[in-house]
Image 1 (cartoon, rainbow, N blue to C red):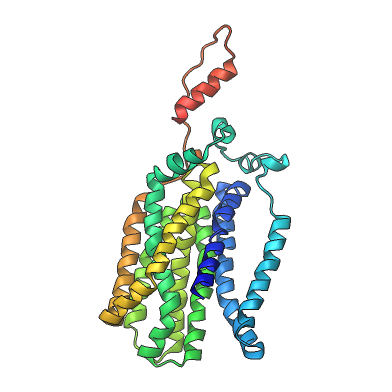
Image 2 (cartoon, rainbow, N blue to C red):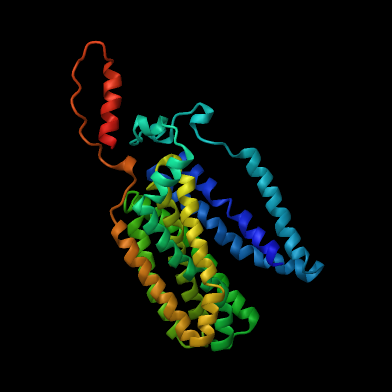
Length: 347
């Protein structure tokens, strides 16, 4: 089971980087947050619906069908995606999305340059300070997200005397809140902050700290209060979870969007793994107060890391530097001189 579950996670990890690349190429900067949020909300919908489907299958046909049916659905979905998805607009003879939307486009040099694997990985990912800050903040965000998903049912049963069914139903509101949080965060980053992802990520992360504290200190006995708090935590934590991945794609080279998203996603899954046995062992030693203390600290650290990115915008959205004047030179094409000047300004 451990081997197959490991392969399950391994193959699921293939989905995120290609989606990041597709969304970066097919949606412009001014609308990308809204559509990225819409796409990201799908995992919350799946997280809320699949447990019900799996329980139904297990009840009527046995536990193996609780695995078979979701697997078959994935295969059908995969075949549909293989048939319908396309590469970039340019590969189909279409203009880039920036040109189509009449927005600022990356420089001609950036669009036409073919980057090697080494350049993508080292120049635009591993040597990019923004990517490292986003990756580390992603680690702490995923600790919170995974810990709430994995441990909140047990917390409600042990400390607030919920039945297993009531606890599971209560935790479903976490996913519902996450769905709405992804949509709201994407829309707000587009409309309110003009495409900057840092402000919403920092604000939502700060809100998570207070929501987690409220969930811990609120006495038991009220399903409505606990469900509302789990809804709030989901709403707030899924915002930065979605936006950090998008910021990684945007703050790197456009052709390195998939690699940048994959790298920060890899660090995020380390956080998800930390929320398993290490956090469980810590909870066993320190109790639930230690559990919620760790989550609050993770939220605070993520806020501190995201605040410096408040004004960060993709390089292609920055005001272009003044190009040096190009003199008329005999024997040299003026357009070639402009390209050279663009390269110098870009550097």
